[in-house]
Length: 373
Image (cartoon, rainbow, N blue to C red; front, side, top):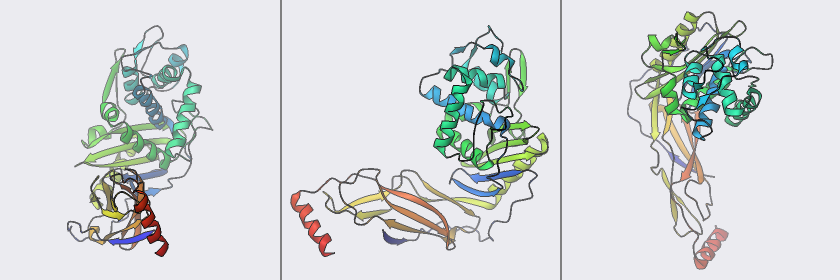
């Protein structure tokens, strides 16, 4: 790898001390992070295994959204309610046998009313049986990197083999928001849903207390305590908090609000480099061109304590020698970012254009040059 020193000169901000520690949080474990940059800001016992309760329904929704995307389900599709779905214990949207219900209504019943009956009906509609649907849930959990999670049902009902962690649930919620932004916006900010002449409010109190909050999901069992995953979008910057094992409905809202406010108050998101704009032209050997423009497919954003942006530095490490052919989007290096000399993140640099192979004489000449070099 070849090192190329780069310093990104950023807009000046007010000089401040590094971000203070977060406030004391009443909960068993928690995570707060910035989805704009992908950085976790702070966490407490993020890998402690817990019962996820109704936070499980985020994975149920994720698999259902996949089925909609893949045309295996449609929103207006009518679903027959099985006896098993009708009788499932716990929170419910009050669906009934012999009264078909649309997939759209079931999603709202699952998200807004946290209906276990809605979850089971969706699982049966998408996969034929809950047991098969759970296999899809665990497959997706493994794919997105949830290393300490296992699902045994689609509802979150207690089971000794049904578990997750604050870190894994943070990853799941962030992935759902990223992969299905339209569906997230459509369902997760809804405050109330009425079905079968029964109106039920969303249990996420922050939807009423903070206009910037637009989701995500509550959960509660005796073992899990009171749990809340909350997301807030302020000025185009989105933070996500996961709080597990709090003491009451009011406490989980209050403590989640603390985490979100702390993240917004004491951190800034800084765009280091825009998408599809070259960072550097990198030398190419044996190619139809002598160099390739390299950059990023998405904006590179980092989160730093307020007043610390001027301490950011970035170093570009490139692959050398880089031999043609080079495909557009091919990784060609890494941008290593530090804050005040401490590692902050590494970001893949890719070719923004393709470079073909040179003719026989060009390849021979570069072979000779590489041999001498």
